[in-house]
Length: 253
Image 1: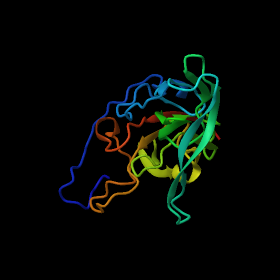
Image 2: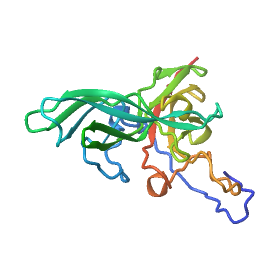
Image 3: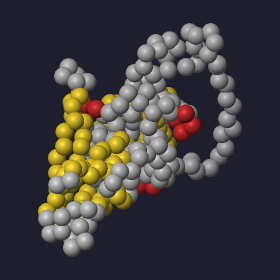
Image 4: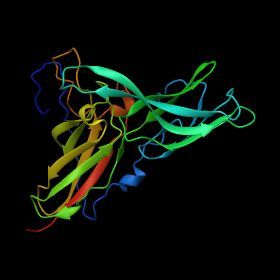
């Protein structure tokens, strides 16, 4: 904020030099995929490749010590519930792949990462000796804007999948031309976030940034929650999450 009601909060004044020429547009959203996750869960007995991915991407899971020739199912564990119904959260598991163990007792599964909440999901295989477990991390991913140019007032949608459910991964905050305009939650839509926006401003390029934030915390003042965390890459207190940037071209009426 330009002026904070908290006396000990710093006030930032930055100077920019605007130069002529074409604007520096963000890379295509397909190139803004998160390439590393700094805080992954510990691997389990099952080998999961890759250990993190976006919704819809192929995943391979393998393990040993199974009964040769026996069919096994791979279970996918997720969180169900929402913040509105008042019934809290529960875990549920469903099969996402099946296979038959080979002569050496090795089982290999191949499946597309389900359309689900972001963060850690436990993978399980039941056998006679117990349960083998592995972990897969679902990262947030973004789609291209459904409309990329038009006059002021043009409606368009920012669409994300794989957004998380915890207090530190549940929301993405929206910044339009360096002005914070709000946030959207993921937990009530099982990780699928659609943000309806309207183009504003003079003809030319306008920029939309989505930053991770913190949904809720015990501290009430100063107000550090529900606002864009510009320093997310260095000190976000929870999950390792990406930032997304879009550009919309406003045209003449």
